[in-house]
Length: 185
Image (spheres, rainbow, N blue to C red):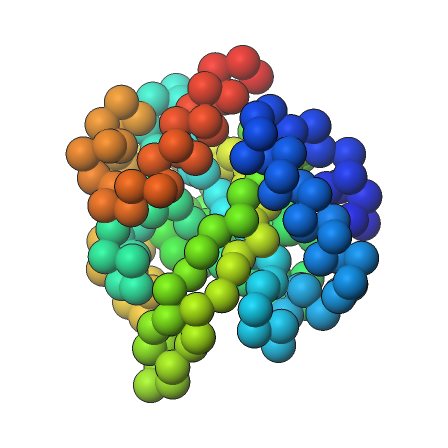
């Protein structure tokens, strides 16, 4: 199912064309092994770009590892349904209960570098996240909750102010790409 979803994804730029090719090459080489962290070089993750119903604010978390405001998301951990992963992670990381996908379709794909870091007292080597992104819609009235082992803040950020919050410069083009795509849906 995952391979078919990625095969069916229509890249919107050169970055996505190349990343789609690499993801499919890796799937052909490693198959379902890419759904777990046992593949220490690269594995699938899924992210949720969570917008309010008016689509003028994005729900972000202040992530411990990256020291930056970021979208929600996480590892596939064996799950091939990456939309389900994006929904689960958004709920866990923010506390929102009322959450729906804007569309069931993948909104973006990207290969994201992860620098080596400590997690729960263990060193995690540098690796790549083969990331599939979805746009999710949440209610601003839901109570927000911090997931203390991953983030220190959760909040609604005006879409046009993201660049003032995000410290990971390489992520800004991805967020901007998603904002442009949402305006066309």
